[in-house]
Image: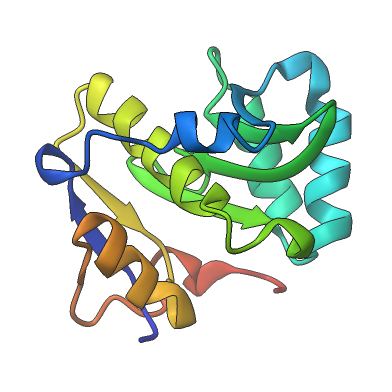
Length: 158
């Protein structure tokens, strides 16, 4: 599905999965602005595109609007919110060697929980494309009709 999806934040799973990740030696931490360069470098080098810029915007907020998955002291995944637009989730990504372990799901749910605590009732996931089945299964996200290209229509490069 090309386009945005909507999540009802009052209806998300309560268990973010952090304990299960901790058993694998993976922790979820709110990014510190002091780590901006390392985080943006990781995101840009691992995922390319304009995600580094969006991540930088999330790291410019206080507190930051970015969570990291960390194994030891190494960043293995990230998730941002309120980066592209207020009330938007994303971008997000997990290093290829750590996919399939629940890292992406936990990062996603951690962001949704934080957004709900901030008072949001809904959140928009921008341009979900091939990830839409994941968002539907994990948080009950539903497609927003006629939402492509949405906020991204003014994107200069991808």
